[in-house]
Image (tube, rainbow, N blue to C red; front, top):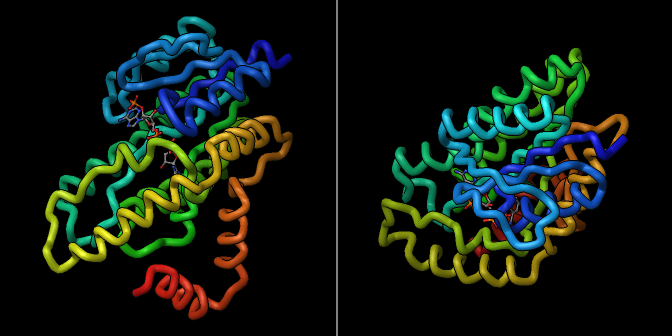
Length: 268
Ligand SMILES: NC(=O)c1ccc[n+]([C@@H]2O[C@H](COP(=O)([O-])OP(=O)(O)OC[C@H]3O[C@@H](n4cnc5c(N)ncnc54)[C@H](OP(=O)(O)O)[C@@H]3O)[C@@H](O)[C@H]2O)c1
């Protein structure tokens, strides 16, 4: 049965997306990964397509290609995304804020709008959006990124209610720090202020250390495969033990305690 299932994974040129595409292929899916360059990797068990999730035309062309080849898409994993290097919220211009939303949030919207009509016709489908623990636990100096991931969570929950009628389910997988090229691809804030220089420098080096010692992207990929195969998927899943602990903290600890914990952790 699995052989006929078609999966499309955005941002599969590295990190979480790449290993997710590999694990899905190993689980029996026919997988299409995407990257802006569209370069096919050596010995990859999936086909790479060119896709820029910030372009309507590119999204349409990519989805049309999979439909042309198979006539269906069973699983969409919206993974493509990036962050802004730790900085104060006021250090990013509106244009920069719009750019991160254009990929992390509107990219998911574009892909969803392109894929859902096909899933509706099929009367089945799964959409898995890669969120973040910052989608339920915002951190200081990560405001824009946290805002995009909150938007992903809110959109996904509404969408899951709407699409269930058509046999389509939507889930969000929320990892904590994961050891990928994420930090190499961070955008520098474009309106830096001298007042924040020392905290920016301290947080950048801390983030590098934390990411280097963080969970491998396998942890997230394994969670995505588990969710994809679940008969009755839930809306939200954490990936990794740190994410699980943070979820419990957010859910059960008094908010004053969480607030104090966040400030203590960052030495504020
Ligand atoms: N690493 C972490 O600590 C962490 C934690 C929680 C959540 N996440 C989330 O996990 C997802 C993957 O991140 P990662 O850590 O695996 O980072 P990564 O290694 O930098 O991979 C990001 C992927 O996104 C693609 N991408 C970026 N902009 C794109 C665009 N406009 N159109 C199409 N593809 C685009 C990149 O492909 P090309 O450059 O080849 O186009 C790349 O394949 C992101 O949504 C991120 O927010 C990461």
